[in-house]
Every structure is written in structure tokens, then in C-alpha cells.
Length: 182
Image (cartoon, rainbow, N blue to C red; front, side, top):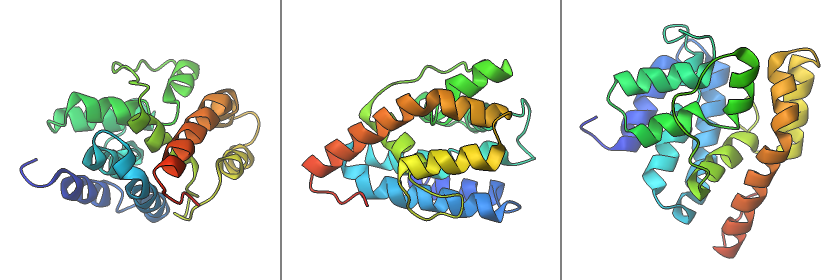
């Protein structure tokens, strides 16, 4: 990682998700949303970089556990990414709940900071095709797409209060900073 962190992250995401165009559109949208609130967190470049990288674990080339947050974080760790970046990828959007349901350990702690909340907000307010949405609609979309008996739907339903709280904290901070989060 000798060049700019955000440029590196975008390049890695595009490379790893090239076979998954819909997932890449989502990631592009999450990166745009993250950039819109980046100035409200302690490390704006890290927020945008992790937004680009949060779903790279969906790449078939990276799948080891079958749980994309962990697979992405493990790949990034092997590539020399910072501990913080790996932790944010591993724990994005309340991944600990699904990890527990799947029996997959996460070796990085969730930092529970405004930057982490902003990442969760960006993910939870972006549709699968990269368009802005509200968090309630996004959660409803995930539940409908996977169906009630799927581990993803069960995990998102269980995580919804934490996800919505992170969204509200991020939107409140953005409003105070004069940032339009629509």
C-alpha cells in the first residue's frame, strides 16, 4: 500500500468484485455515502477506504470461511492492511450477530466509534444497486430478499436495533455538521 489509501482500496475492491457487478455497484454507492459524511469522523480517508473494502469477502477468490466480513478482513490482513481497517471490515454492519449464528469467530474487536457508525450508516442506507435509501427500507429489503428462515435475515432482524442506533447517531452528527444525509 504505497499509494493513497482510498485509491488503493478502490482498486482492490474493483479487482476483487469484478465478477460481481451488482455487489460492486452496492460498494460504489456505499463509498459515495461514506464520502458524504467523511468529514464528521476522526479519519475520513479510512472511512472511505473501508467503505470500498467492506464487501470484498464476497469474492469467490477470497472465500475461506464463507462469511464475507471475516474473509475480507483476513485477505486485507494478509495484504498488510492496518489492524483498524481489518477490524472495521470484519465487524461492519453488526457482523458479530451473523458470525455467532454461523459459528465463525471474528478475531478483531468492534471499535464502536463514530467512524464505525458512519460505515454502518453508509451500508444500511445504500441499496444493492448502489442507490441511497433509508435504513428501515434497506433492512426490509434484506429480510424480503433472504426470507425469514435464512441466517442473514435472522441476523439482520436481531441486529436491527443496533444498526438503526448507529444510523441515528451518524445522521445526528451529520446534521450538526450541516451535512445533508438524504
